[in-house]
Image (cartoon, rainbow, N blue to C red; front, side, top):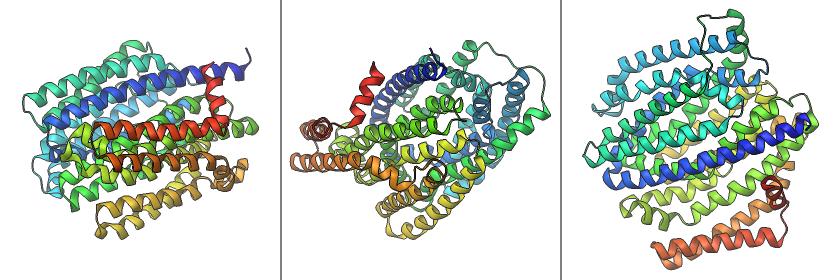
Length: 477
């Protein structure tokens, strides 16, 4: 078997295991969230959501782009891995100490004193997770997604049960905190036992300098992305009620099931694969073009389908006290659908080691996004969501710029490839929404709306012989 075919075989197997993991994880997470949403009030979900940005920023510092650099290096040494390992632990302890001391300030910012102990306890998982950061990276680099699948599923099931038990015992917001901690502890133990690599007591200045040159720019990009991804949560938590933040997060998390999760599957598999082919531009171009078309074929209808059935879906799963989330979901779906196209385009810059260009694009897009956010804040929550749609479309121009320059795959070429899928997905959205509006927000409406949307999309794809169908058949074989 040739090197390219061997990599393709690993990539396909990796995708299948990642689909199994993420699919099962998301089903479990969805079931658990439905149960918890019936036991815990929306404002308590909002309290936890207010703190996510702080732990997310800390996680970005702990990693500092080193895991991406470690995967990219085809001939990593014991010194390389040990250097990254000790760096992660030291930064994790520093970040936890800062969050512990600053917790009262965070509580004062939101005007909710109960947030201080919640942040201090939740942040413990940063230190626990840092103990297996390199171990996870090695599993990803070796494309051992089968092991990760098993560990994450066990963690999701056990921690979910922990959260439900504490919620049933009326621990309220602390049920969500204990669930998060349990998940980190369980998966960390499994990963540590599985990966036989152990750190040496060494710290190589040479390895650190090499990884920092690449990783520092990735850190800057990730920090910008983390801040921007959570700026809506910060703004909503500060300007509006905590319940409004819970509605927004519920809508956002559902669209992530259809966009971010499938995209992360593709990225986790294609990045280490394409890194091994980084010197062959023609192979990269063909790989990225096929990945873009396949991602759009799967994710566009998933996102727009969620938007089409938003009202009966929210009402059936979470009860009518969460119904405002459906209005937000209908809008956010049009923004989230473009996420895989953004991510896959940026993936090219990481494969080529151009973290400088990656950072430049992130700065431009975040300035643009913040400007749009500032304009829409006074107009209300729904206007803010429409602003995110505009920002996503404008970002498409920036993210496709360097692919157009280096690979001849600019925005026009990509939209030409994606237009049939986009058009058919739009028709599916209309069919699902009209059906849902006609039948109300019950079970019958949800089932019929899903069936109508699926019939339009799958029927159209088969009728017009979309090439992505054949691509999926080949992957299946």
